[in-house]
Image (cartoon, rainbow, N blue to C red; front, side, top):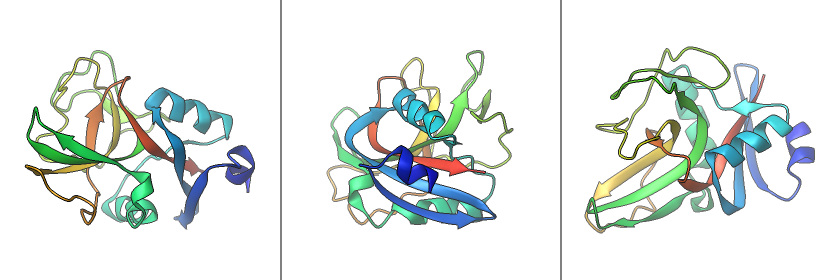
Length: 168
């Protein structure tokens, strides 16, 4: 399989949905969206494009049972315990206006479905123009059992330990 040969030392979980191969890749180090995009292109794929609830549930099922696909912690600024999951192919055009203007898939497909976490996207920081799986709970909480199927907008300096490749 092309993905295994491309990223031989990475932990991966994969499956087929509507004749597309999805590969959830767990990196041994945190990666920024630009690094995930680099590896994705090198492998001849694109970051996952999600166009339905069924597809989103399928993709989320690849990584939700393995905590190594997440960056979890507590953010005292917002008083939330968060769970940041894999990068997906969400991108916002530079002229896009929040809350939801200009979002598209980085492979060029229009955004016909979305699963934003509550009050997201929010451009919390200037340049929060890429998307990942994300969820949080209020206060200090154990988020290990939190199943993540929702998305958040993040920026170029944010990082997480995973990304999802899609092969057509």
